Length: 310
Length: 261
Image 1 (cartoon, rainbow over the protein chains, first blue to last red):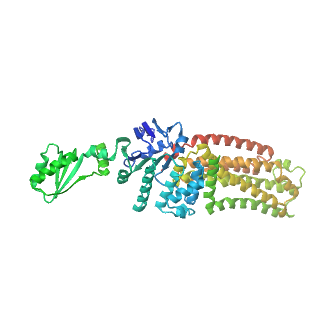
Image 2: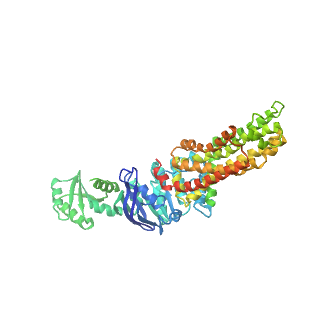
Image 3: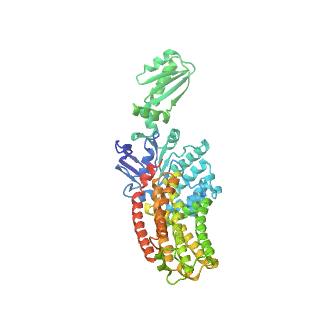
């Protein structure tokens, strides 16, 4: 659905200085129906990448194909089949919600303009306010209207640039639920976000990007690759010698005592947990419960970005 | 064509929601129409001199066999003709200068450029949305002027001159050409600057050719007649071709998006 090969974008800011490389040799594939999270710090080149993929700006080098259309050769066709939610909603504030959507539906060549406008205004809970000027809308309502605009022409590929940025928790939750619905409909979604929890919940794969693609995989695979798997053994009390006893086991890669808990790094907890539990019980420990510690996407992101800095 | 129509609808919906812009469009033609009517009314009595010695000698060729009174009215009204030529230049600048830079300021340009609209369609839509109201207003106010002239004391000789080829070429040919040229120029400027006020100020430069005609006639260097109007039309047509070519080259989506801060 999206195929990117060696995509590079350079900006000449000063003729005396070397060009600024915003996107460097990006190679990536996003499959049909996939929700792909594109994570990176501010200024990493995420928006530039999205603009290239939507045929808004041309790459300096490399190639990208979206929905079987080359972004350079078939710009108009690419723009017709993708939906883009820009970082700021950018609505016509003096016009009503209905008029805003009608304009874009006509520009996208939608056949049943009133029908599609009504469908999305109702879906996003804006139908009752359809004749109100957008200038009177809250930030959340504008964002919902911008989402409606993105989807009006039923695009097969959707680019969402910071869809919940600046929204209150309730509005952000609503937008996330809506993205989840799109995911269930099988839409291909390219999601740029700073909200790592959002990416973790919505995305099948994530790419961490800072001018170049640093890593790409499923959130769970990234966790395992970076941190292995960590199991917490919660005990009634913790004797100092039990930490040493567990760390001597050949398959244990790390042990850390925290209060009454032993935090143990393992490669295969399903096979190795029973052995540790047995040893602890034999040593006199009372095991209350055992659970796997899940590293957040934030941990993965920070570690990846810090490694890049190093 | 449908997308051009959509852009025109959008521009008009936005512009006419803003009452200040609406009055800016209407006030100027009102003034420019009232001024010559007041002049005709004032000069319709017996106060005017019967000699035409104050007028440039070359102007006598226009008057032909007309009386001195008719000739003076024709001479003075010929200066006001330039006001009717200024209307289609000044009015669209207000709309056109804001058209692109305004979209940059409200961040609505990127979603618009992300649609399948072509650069040519976008420029045509923006240009026509600004030029058409100006042309309509100019023609309507010229019609009002022609209708009211006899009522305020305009002589039959003056009426005949106002409906002569010189005026008709000015209103129906030069006016539209100037409106389109000034609008394209304003759209080009609007796409290059980051502040709507700067766009409006720079775009106003396009009034200079009309001012040159006005001062040229007042100084007696030229007389606005059919050949002058035809030459001016040809120059404006050439300017339009050049500006359309320039607009298509200058309006780079990428630069507009990436240079905007």
